Image (cartoon, rainbow, N blue to C red; front, side, top):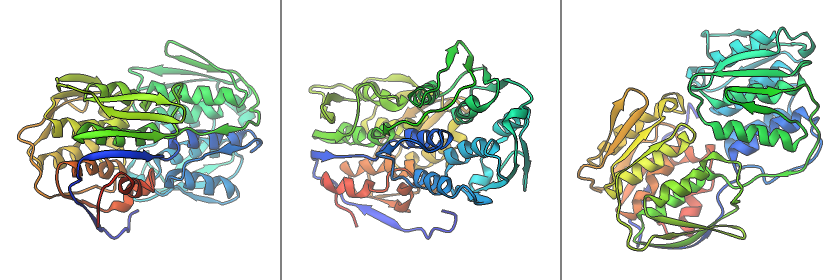
Length: 416
């Protein structure tokens, strides 16, 4: 993504009535986890309905070329973290690297934890950041079966350690300190591990995974709830909305399914059907201020901030500390782009709590910068229901939702 030539996509004002059905991509979070677990299980069993997102396709490509001495994850943070832990126990010398932005995303906590176990990992450029050289490490020579790691930075570090834990001769006891973020993602990891024959216990701030063997299994991945959020946004902003998004389960493992309750506060009713969700407007809805903690669902923050500003709804948003170290600094990005409409995201508690200030929200054919962040493009695209706008570098959606623009067309959006 570092050398992508920036282009624009222009969206005409939508006519307003949203009807039809679309199928968002499969869950990237589930796909990336089961791919690593499947590899640790000796690649026995069958994985179905894997995500076509670039991050997942990168994961598939690298795991298929297990003999490669350099693994380039491009801009896929999840892939970098999961495969760093995987590589540490794979017994093969390997360099983990990525794009320039990936080289700016910290990995110190995970590497320190792996080193505590006995892994031989050295930074190749800047301490605490990729690229890293990972030398062969024998899990049988592990130095400890107990680790302590902060719970408030990224659940992906925790997931990376949990997935390799059964391979350690005494298993692993993981002590989480401080505030624990993205708990549903940690729970998802443990539930997926269980589907491949590994059990664990989570009591308070301690997760214990005994030494066990993964077993091959067949698993079908659900549609992605983060991707669903953009269609909830469209339902919230459209004058009339009555449509379906397919592939969702009422017993979902994904934490972002909380979008159903958040968007109910923004005028969207969702009902599970045999093959997904039916979205429609709540009749007589009156927007009211509310508070929402995004600690467990940070990927929904941009969507909610944009919808709130457009609907003139004051929303106080907490648990946003991890947004600073995503594909871009998402706090700055949201603030910069909302200000183009006369709105803002006002800081209340440093790097944690913010308030959407709708201001005098106006559409005036604004140009949206995406900062090489897929979620910026998709969070702002639904504003075409209110007026014309253009979005920079539309290719960024390939990271998680390659057919996003095509799905917009299915529901009547016009673009060039």
